[in-house]
Amino acid sequence: MAIIRFASGVKDNILTQIKNAIDAGPGAGLFKVYTAPMPATPATAVTTQTLLGTLTFADPCGTIAANTLTMDPITQDSSADASGTAAWVRCTDSTGAAVVDLDVTATGFGGTCQLNTTNVVILGPILVSSFVVTVP
Image (cartoon, rainbow, N blue to C red; front, side, top):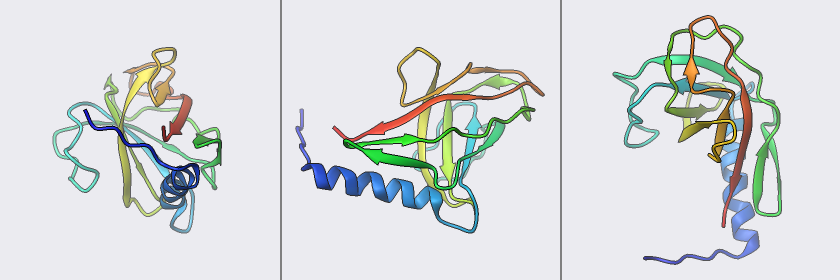
């Protein structure tokens, strides 16, 4: 097993790059919720996955403190585009340029990004209850 330990300033620089990439573009970044499978990289096009809904980050998207990026409240999608099981999220800047893909869990299941539920129902709400990125 590999062990990597970053200095605190390096950790904050990593998080700043993520934050700045989501905040890039003329408006707020987007938070797109999809069914499985997650593509190999954020550069890989979404093909067989179903877009369940799109939420909007605050602008700026969050704050960095103590080696942690905590996202500010993300505007809910009050009317999901489709029904399905949320498996992953693609975060983009306001122009749609992919920044990061990550898995999601329902609230209370300890994922980096937690939704009110992973069982999305068409026309129902999609809410982010927590989105925190920590560099160990």
